[in-house]
Image (cartoon, rainbow, N blue to C red; front, side, top):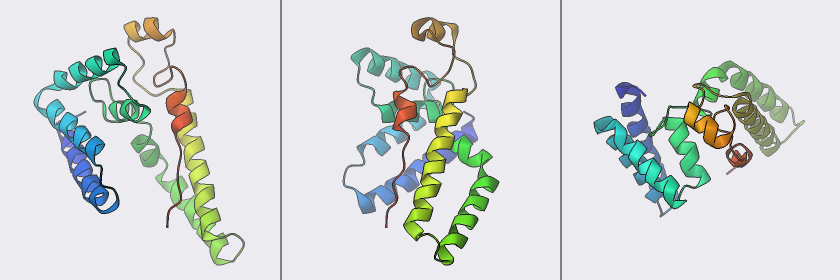
Length: 167
């Protein structure tokens, strides 16, 4: 992750914190992410050390694993969400336009349109994970997991990708 990317990530977390303050009282995870991003900027090995400690203690949640890989915190960056959005902008725009048109015509409801888009989003991201995301796993990781495919060990991360229609 380049320095400019880290700056953008820290700014995005700040923005998420502002939104979180309006919606939920517990923003501990976002503060932790921000601290990890800032630590990586100052000491690239700090995130790797924190990750190794958490792994040894069995303290990593699926959200932790997703965040660590999405932003490359202590491991090579393997974006499965942001990269999907970036590579799917035109497809997403066309899909949302078509769904909005159906909703305006009364053929589906707004929630049905959003639900269909959410289902496609989940399927696309799960497919992206299943196909494999560069860079490949390190030899030590392949030996430990028995697989060269990044982001797939037990399948829990891929199965945890979901969406929710709100409002």
